[in-house]
Length: 183
Image (cartoon, rainbow, N blue to C red; front, side, top):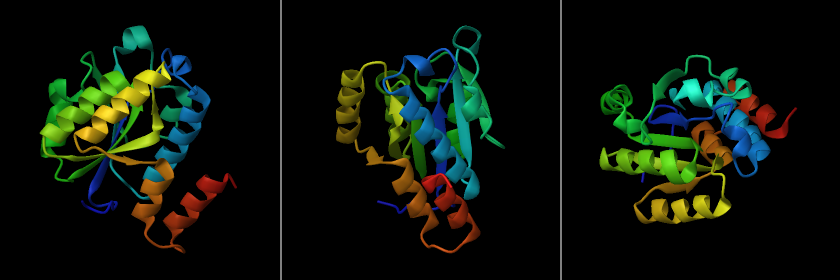
């Protein structure tokens, strides 16, 4: 297993959209942790991409998340697996980074199918556990069991970002520390 670094990881944020985030189990915690995660990814310049499932019907990326995107590439899709959209698949085929930090919704649909396809593509998938959700906690927990059984690695936003940080005292660590403590 590879240790996460800013040079060997890409983040994929799946479908955090206006009309579906409010329906997620514990949506407030999902948003809080996702904002922390995205802020940390930006501090370490980890390349990130995001998706929107049928934005005409489900809306844009939720504003609190979109405001943190910076250079994040946003792909629209209608498929459940992100990799069934040719432009997203091509992005990950061309991306030489072996690790994918995966977050978003819904865990048992788009996140699950995307993770399965990323594993099949040869990527090591790290599921950012506190940044995924479904409408039903049972759906999330069942999807997690399936994901662990195919080799997806569980992590949390804080664990992943501090692993990328490696040491204290850097300017990026100071940003991460402020994000983590809310100060």
